[in-house]
Image 1 (cartoon, rainbow, N blue to C red):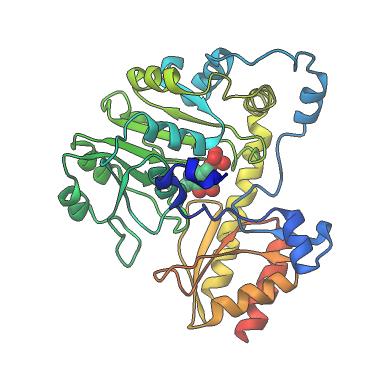
Image 2: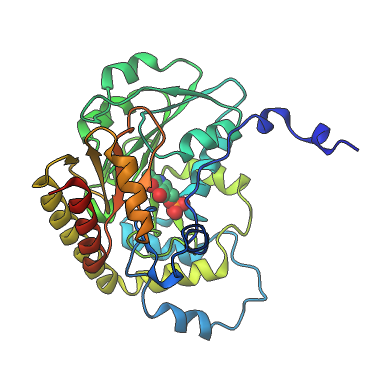
Length: 362
Ligand SMILES: Cc1ncc(COP(=O)(O)O)c(C=O)c1O
């Protein structure tokens, strides 16, 4: 029997999302002892989650009971953290799940979704999965969005635009002026604030005035929960209700819920790590700025995009990997000479700086 005959032909054509390798895979592929892998390729938090989390997970007794499909206590706790009422909030298995849910509840075959490249890869991947057409309105040389082109390229089949602030991988923000301008269009405007805690600037204040605004957040980065999958979105209650209707009923699993609640009870500890990462981001940026052969872009996230002199990025990527330091290389024309470096602990950053300086001959 030809099993392929049964598969969805449109989905078969989609290229897989290029997710980063796990530490185990990196360790095996590069022959690096796993404890020596320095993972600076996925904007993870090097300090990990709240130290109170393992006890909280250990003390919980009811893992045999399904989680709450309405996410009541999680939404109430987030309501206090964010400052909006729980009926504006929906929690997901990471921001990734919410990106997919938003597209599932809006896109019909032939509808379009707008992105501004270079940007986070899940927007295009999830658009294709949901049978949407992708409209890319590339950013300018400084990686700012092209407001005029965006407004011009919106058609009556455009349902959603993804704006990312700070943007991954470029690290820059979108201004509230540009955002309010785009919000005048009759489309859903998703502002992805996955890196909000590293920038301190949010569009959440606009949600009550604009029912077409959706703000996405994540606990993967500031709270160190990438492995437990917790994200949330803030939006008009009518959108929350629709997403609630179509989502997997138990999408916020119990371990993720405990991790969320524990993080929100330990904000000052987690915020002190965010502050350390911001300090290191600024130190790393200054060191790279003073080095010949590399231009670091200003970042409001926990990573820095760096443009290297011709041909150096691939050499440096390999050199870093041979020493167990893994950064992100993008196989695209506009980011050809670039590497995105997640900000690590000071000792990781020192090792990284040493290899970069040696390779650049500084
Ligand atoms: C801009 C952006 N949005 C969303 C995500 C995914 O976040 P989560 O881990 O909550 O699914 C990432 C992850 O790197 C990201 O960079």
